[in-house]
Image 1: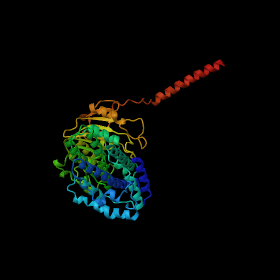
Image 2: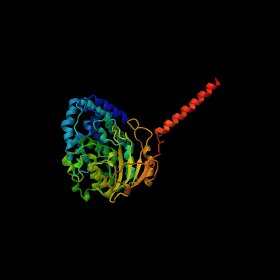
Image 3: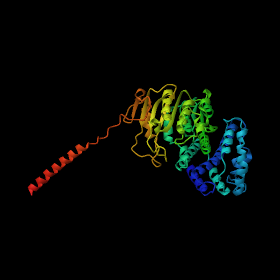
Length: 484
């Protein structure tokens, strides 16, 4: 039901002059979906309060509630066409009344860790791009058919929202940077293995995939107490995101997965001076896939001890600094980080190896990231002690990865098993730090366990073999001639 509804909504938005791409479809579906989800959430809270003899005060005033402006119903529970706004009336209400009302929550909310504040923040970043009030009415009607009342419904909804984000990534126009393959994220979370009570941070949050999967991991890690639930809701997940659309989608994604007021801030992480980070600002766990290939301005580079324009290298410095002593990290980075010879790369490798225990490097095949041919590695490290030994795992697949042939958790199963013991195999090996070049700190993986290919023969050997075959052929031919 959800899947077909999303397809129908995309078809409607495709016809609208204000929506030109998959990115616009996701953004516009998101805010309407969010208000319907919020309406169902408020109904659930009202029901729960009633059962305990309490009164629930709705967050949204009645005139702006979904059941009044978006989907008023008649006595039979069907859309009341006399009361339901459409056309210019609907577009004007949304643009002139609804959005300004919702924006005000940002200033009127008690604190930043409330759902009210998040509502205000989301609608301060958004604008309605659906130009036709008739198209908007059609989309609202489709979304009104959706239900988020049961756990199963919410799970299906969040799963399909992930699919929409994935499709947005496939659509290009920088959408791909928002989406890291979920099997890879799940594997990284599994290896880092955060625990309830630890703080988890992603400074390049994108669609919040790492935070969502960490939430799912912790939710199922043990039987949760009431205190655990509050900890997961309020004091566990933290993120920063520079781009408006990614910020909105990341926040929405977390809310749809069940974190009511995500601690995601709309800011440029790299604008923060590393010297200003104090102990109170640090986190236990860092999980991230920072954007690579970007170039940062000189004034941004001034915030970092190792000056470089490469965005991912600045992020790595930020992550090392913002981790608590004993903190753990799983970070995706371009594989060229392991071997680049420029001064900044060498200095960064030295910084990592001297300040952290880089215990595992997962080397991924090209095509892991749909639409990007770049090869990547995942760095797993702990802060506080220098690296003694690095365990490498080269993910060797018998197929090429792509849109129709994506990475799966099964592909990574051997890595997860071997990583626990740092076992050796045809695809895994360990390197002692004393065997690393102490001037370049080159970490590029050279697999000593790879089976040798059949050695190519020397030209003299080939010529000798050809001569032997010629002589043999001549003998056979002579024998035949003699018989004749």
